[in-house]
Length: 219
Ligand SMILES: *[C@@H]1O[C@H](CO)[C@@H](O)[C@H](O)[C@H]1NC(C)=O
Ligand SMILES: *[C@@H]1O[C@H](CO)[C@@H](O)[C@H](O)[C@H]1NC(C)=O
Ligand SMILES: *[C@@H]1O[C@H](CO)[C@@H](O)[C@H](O)[C@H]1NC(C)=O
Image (cartoon, rainbow, N blue to C red):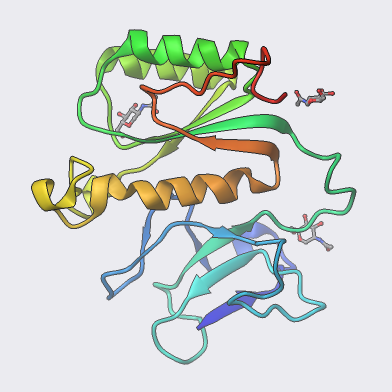
């Protein structure tokens, strides 16, 4: 059951609800996790029917019927809410690249710098990277790129909750979840980018999509 709360009238400190700002939020007393809540503007009320005059700002998932007042109930902010204005004109970015699941002590700074700079030359505005962990040099490089705003680091501490499979081939590497939850992060990136970027490319860091008839990806 999904329930939505109306916008609280008082200041935020008056709000008794626990609001998650994390990328992975465990659903209490279950084996499930909540990743993020996005409004899908392409369809009406897929799962969550919001009353017409209710300005819902957060959503929670209940495992039992009843009022959502338990102190352990955790609410996720609803993103991609409808904003007034023309859909076509309001994109913040033309081109976003999503890179999933940086993990282990991966530290190939030259590869990341090469790929990120090539994307910049090709007109990419934003690169989103899901980060479980990385080596010290790459950490410094990515801190610098995210301060500048070209890279958006999304924390992805999946190893704190599950034993991730460290290879793409599940039958060989085993684990609780395929390849650090790559499908989940790429899906998250599609929703994250949906209303703010005209184009979205899902790619690995060791592969660059190279246009051969134009000098930028947008064209
Ligand atoms: C809905 O609530 C949000 C957060 O309080 C506010 O920023 C927004 O303007 C509200 N939208 C409408 C249509 O009232
Ligand atoms: C997106 O591309 C259009 C057309 O080339 C350009 O006018 C606009 O400034 C670009 N937007 C961004 C955010 O770079
Ligand atoms: C990536 O995640 C690790 C583990 O949480 C953290 O120590 C590191 O600073 C993060 N790096 C970046 C660039 O976000």
